[in-house]
Length: 314
Length: 258
Image (tube, rainbow over the protein chains, first blue to last red):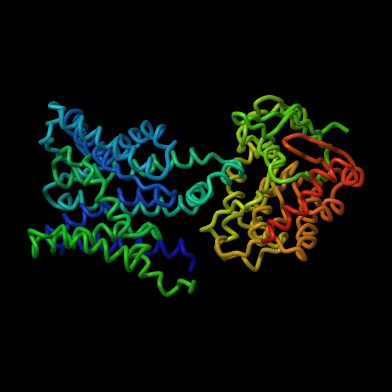
């Protein structure tokens, strides 16, 4: 069985299990899965950037742009359907990254990381000062339907959950296909040697730009899903700690598989929930220790556990 | 016959340093030309100027009559001017196969922008394997480039320059880092693979035996200038070349061996 066939079957099976489990899962678990998927979408975007050799500490920018765009579309423009709101959020975030990407694509390494952080903090500052958007409080968001089903009754109760699962499946499959394509293969090439990429007739900056927009669109979709699940948006979504959490998930997960960010995000949420419950005053310490353990023992992320057997000795 | 590549009065200065001074070289189609000269003589600068990595302070580069001065490397590459590097520029984390696949993928996506390719009707995947076997790299197919021996990396670097079917290939010291007894075998292999397609070849070389054996013409550089240009026999017998280039080469070679 080829690698991509295995990925498709694995992801399809996981999505199927998640869908079938919905009626038996408690409310908190459904919520935890939706939030994990939202963060996983942002981390999936980081996976693309990491493969291109870039670390962004500012994915909160697109996350918040997607969430606020969905919120404004729901409240001001009267868009009622959750699926449409998620699409609009993703498009708004993609448009945002298409603009700031013009500048970001020129930078690499720490300069890229810091500039991406700066842009996200600019949005944070703007949101905090915008009384029309609720300043530091943000505002409430609600979808009346998801895929045409009214939320709050019947199968519509699982609407946002189903939307999140479908989005995760679609994003992971689409990205897996992209990364294996002629265009997607340029990401690690740019990371390794931009000079050679140019001398093979391609533009390294265009590759970086495209992957930035892709990562932005994914983070925006995650932001919109969060807005729908939580029912609220606030400026914290653009704050650097939100971006830092995405980096945390991305490093925890590793870049080996498009499924890893979702698994990583679920682990992070579980870990946080339990740490918060059992060590309410020192839960950050538990998180830090977990991060340290991953970096020390699984430097390629937790997905490397699944590949350990196949890895050849150095 | 009209020249395929023509450099006229190329000059490049970095502040007070003159890396290239009024270099004029014209290369006939379907020929093999050697570039010789000591370290810092301007050979690599010349390659960098021709391929657009550096923009000349003055002078022009023409390819098949077309002015390409100041074009970036990716556009120069698409026209069919390709180069390999003195220090192999490969994708270290990718396998030998993927290294070629990246380039063939670029060519495949931009079929219309490239003058020619080896692709024809076949897929990048098929051509990558075909090229690996042509350059006798098949046994390293699935090894990451970072762990390959230097000579193999060198060969891979040259193969990567060939993913775009070049009209002219510029090789920067193809035999540096390769042991003395493997040099001829490597050049036979490389030139055999390249010349089968009648590609014009320019190569920088320090080993005069290689220059004598494989070139039809030699251009000698010294201090950013061209000091001799002609038949290998004549150029290598030239008094000034013997004093400034060949004499110095022996020392440079010993230093490099340390």
